[in-house]
Image (cartoon, one colour):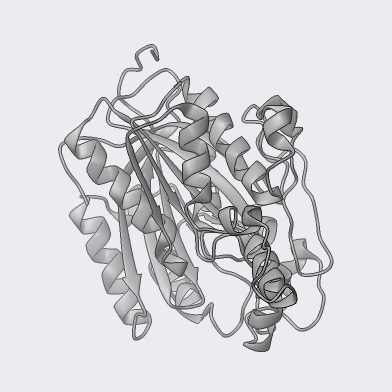
Length: 367
């Protein structure tokens, strides 16, 4: 998806299993987990949400709304022109509470709060009400491609209005019911490991994660710009490594970018010996001379984990620094980081490519 209009990331807000909600710090404090489930490290919600409103919200709505407000403050935007959110499974904890109540009370005298806060678009509506946004509002619920679909939507919206600001968000929670179901399918590891040792486990399955991340996308740069999202592409169920390699080669060719121009690539490897085969082959063939960054030992595996990777890539370009905790290569890091490639995979089904570039356009004061 390339056009005349560039897509600038002018603000970011993220809450994850790491303490990275403060945009002034970049992975300076690392959290580790031992039970194969990674939960968000949350800020003081009262700094972002009215205490009266706060007491009525579920945990994940608090996380999502706070991430959106952090993003808007970072971009210095009061009201966006549109809000687009993405989720793989939505608010499972609230949905579970509602369904249990339906069963226990035999569909009588149900609490409406569980139903309202369990719908997929609850966060998009809440952010719209909080920011007084009466514009475009949409939510994508498409499992491993949810965030990519939302981002592509935002990119097309920007193509039509380069001065507009679109708030694009992703959220998924580590619900116990989801963990049980996915464990039966061997999506998560049977043995408990330390999350920071994920890539040393050499066993099937990954670890469960969660998070909420918002990005302010615009066709106009500002003095808050993190980087440029040059392009995005998705590939569903590649037959083999050759198919994936061909798809990536075409993606870079369409964007007039060679492999030599990529300063580092972010791998969506999940520590799963069964589902990491294709992306591992890709790294050993096409990208073996490119410094590699990994991230799922910090946030875990979930449908919209690519949003964490996008934050990581934008942070690397903004700070011109790759933290040791995510660096997985013996290659020398280039002195100047201009181009970052993200290759993410979810359950060996959903593959996505993101091409990020350092902002070279003169920055103008944000309004």
